[in-house]
Amino acid sequence: QVQLVESGGGLVQPGGSLRLSCTASGSIFSFNLMGWHRQAPGKQRELVADIISGGSTNYADSVKGRFTISRDNAKNTLYLQMNSLKPEDTAVYYCNAVLVLAGSRYDYWGQGTQVTVSS
Figure (tube, rainbow, N blue to C red):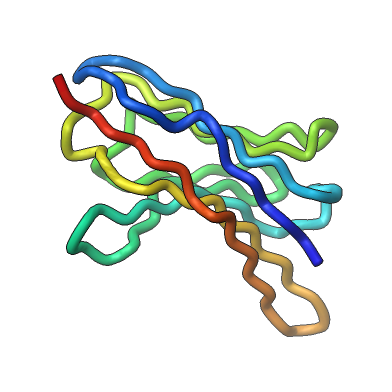
């Protein structure tokens, strides 16, 4: 069973930076897609950014130019560098990993890490 553990959340002032990490219990090399999602109070969970195994990335319009997603297969870790943070970035951030095997899709989720942007 794959386990994903996020870390790096916290309280930061507007304009500040945080780097989130998501470490998997095993190799992430086999995952077809990994990403970060977030859920603010009273809102639906939304995609922030994702990265496929080949390295191509995709970002929500709201974070383009401010956030960078990356993965280190050697460390079994996914990252999200968040710069120029805004109060509207406040949410619980979840790591997601997708494995496609024999035509079936398997989704794995971390427990989430809180990011609060406030002065």
